[in-house]
Picture: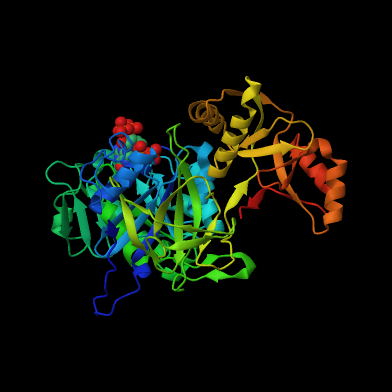
Length: 539
Ligand code: G4P
């Protein structure tokens, strides 16, 4: 049973525990090194004992904590969506974002629950498509970003070229904090001009990080005596140009999302990892306020507990229907057993078995603070976007549902199983895996997803968990938009006139199914009073 200790300030006075929370995610393009970096961050934080544990997660679960008993009894299986660890008095909550682009919707929602993000870039590839997309989401939400240029132990682009690319491609000031000392076959380590430190290997050049050498500057013999002259020349030039040509670190600008500090490193060889954690501890923001309905902002120092569900994960055991809702706490001190109001349902729920997620273990959470994420086991009452409060009638806002890019009609081979199919799709929709649209005319539901891979998952899970085999048929539609109008009569009239193209989503909100991008514009122009929305707030 676990209470993450509330660390106290050096001065003696106890700091509010939330001030010591750093809740963040890693964004990257597949293959840039997110998994490797995650693992190294966890190792540095003492959260795992051996490299390889993150990759092997899920496979070898350890049956020891209280939570494990619940997991076994209820048959819930949860991958490490949240990884909490403590280092030097700071509690880090690292939220995992699925790497595959088909699951980007899940990623977007996870980003609503973080206060900062690390953007991992491959030194040879620079900014890639997925990085750019995720970056845009962070920018929309003013999430401060720390950049980690990974794989400098391999041949990569020139450090200045990478900095310029980030600056130009993302229209963001860059502020280099550390520099590579050579790359690829000339790789010697990392230099930190802020504290005059040279991080290097022991023995063989290019080996894993083993020693920190304090130096007096770039002309220190520790550097000049070991590093090739041509590498020293380049490093000196970089450091000089770096301090003249790029922004100095400015915390306000970073917190506002206008500037990104840049670290060079190699996750595989342990370079730059601790610097990242130290930077997060010193400069990344503690939990911020959360927007809610009625123009309200929930402040982390408020007394009453509020939290919102940003992710729901079902168990993979067909015999059980239990799920875990991942709740990000926004305010108050949560205590195990608390009764919280489930605002959407208008009901009270007792949270008796909240879970903390550590890298290799899960434990019952006795107490949690703003910034923390707790897992709440439930039978399907909680879904993505739900708000929990101590009674207040508010919803946390800003969790988007996206217009699907792939639409398919569900084909059921055994018509006796309509009920199971609908239940299954409804459940998957509540997890946020798919969207469902019930056409006004015709009885076959249409599912919408952001990427094709999600369709395979739907087929597999309906078969495994609901004993129902389904297939998909193409439909003439390519996208959907939620329709809204200030005048309800006008909206009804519009829906009536377009029955063939209108469906209702799982919350019975009307959507217009479009056949082409051209039609989106055409119908939009013809109906200036109707709003056609690409995203919808989930409340
Ligand atoms: P991802 O989660 O972002 O998709 O990336 P992941 O960490 O899985 O890394 C992708 C590949 O890049 C892996 O190689 C990994 O070992 C390698 N890698 C990650 N960081 C570094 C680094 O700092 N330097 C170098 N040289 N390589 C790095 P792989 O061959 O695909 O997998 P594996 O067989 O090595 O595990």
